[in-house]
Length: 257
Image 1 (cartoon, rainbow, N blue to C red):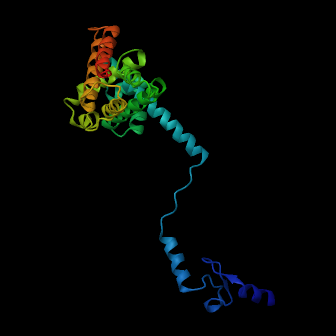
Image 2 (spheres, rainbow, N blue to C red; image 1 turned 135 degrees about the vertical axis):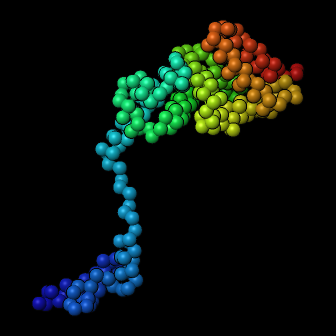
Image 3 (cartoon, helix red, strand yellow; image 1 turned 180 degrees about the vertical axis):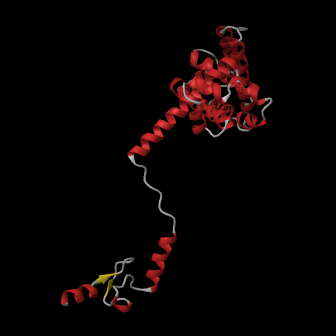
């Protein structure tokens, strides 16, 4: 009896863990040391459960999902590059990806969501590859810009495919407002970056006087995109196009002695 009495006397509040020397009503052990702790315990019970920490199995599942989504997006790229986006039905995409239509529908709620995701993934892939090919050198900004413009030319199979895919999205955007809202962004990060490099060269006295950096950047990007399309259509050769772009870069980087 004495041990039981001592246990009651040294009981602790289940909320703040403070010692409690008295038993609860009707001889039941007290759970809380005060009404405040009792209210806190009540609020905790009403709160939604904390999100579970991802288990290793969850991480594997997430990685598998990303791999599958990438597999389906690559199928969109191939269809867009070879046949245009009008041919990219959900069923055709599933067949190209080597999965069932149900798998495509599971990972993408709608065709629009799939097309948009495939576009974003291609942008990320192009940016990743460009970072491995374009190296910033403040002492040779003309060379940096030349390497950046090369990313718009079909110099290899990957860049040729990307140009074809973007051309397919551009054609689709002319008649699909939802795609246009995504593809034709109001922002121009690439033109802004090139303009920044030209402005940097201006500050260093490496350019011709009186240039408008943003206008020059717009002209360079538009020229590279258009000329790259001419190469795809075999209207111009790569050598001719690169010579044209280098000609304009030479005019920009021609400081007065």
